[in-house]
Amino acid sequence: MDSLEPTDDLLESLYVVNKVAKQLADEATAAYERGDVTESNVRSARKDALYRTKTAVLSRVVAHDPSLVTGEYHAIDGDVWLFLAVGEWRFHQPPHAFGTALTDAIETTNSRDDPIDAPYVRDPSVERSDRSLETALAHLADAGVNANDHLASPTVTTEHDRLVDVRWSHLP
Image (cartoon, rainbow, N blue to C red; front, side):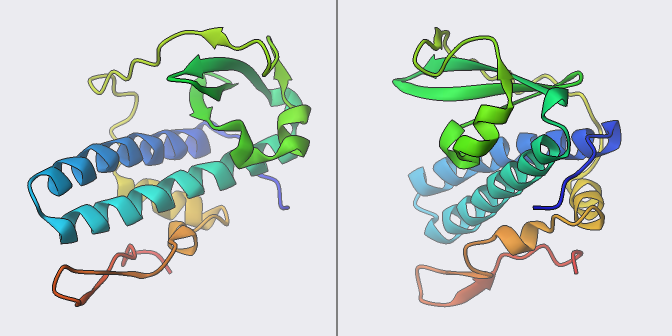
């Protein structure tokens, strides 16, 4: 695995990707609830790709220098999550997404068997960047992590069996 140096520019782009993925999750649910299957499928496919992009970037950051990443295990709704700190940036990740080799390389303040029981509260009003998703994705693609490569499929099927392209057109 190629490593990535966790520059502030890279981490800001990752923050934007993570923030948009959370928004897409909410939008996919809202679209589903109002019966817009196509919109729900598009938003969900992109959300999943952004979360896989986040995992790829964080994995390569840990591979670059595990000592730059610290973690803490939290119990949230019956699941264990790894909360990561890379400099001033914070991200959460299911530990299984990294695999044992990477989670073992990260210095943690507690064990997975003894997670902190703290509810995860997401505050959508907190903004640490005004960078657009387009700019963030372009920066990550330049660093070697293209979100289009993390789509399960480049298309989703509409409720009328048509295909909709979900790729980000500005990426190579």
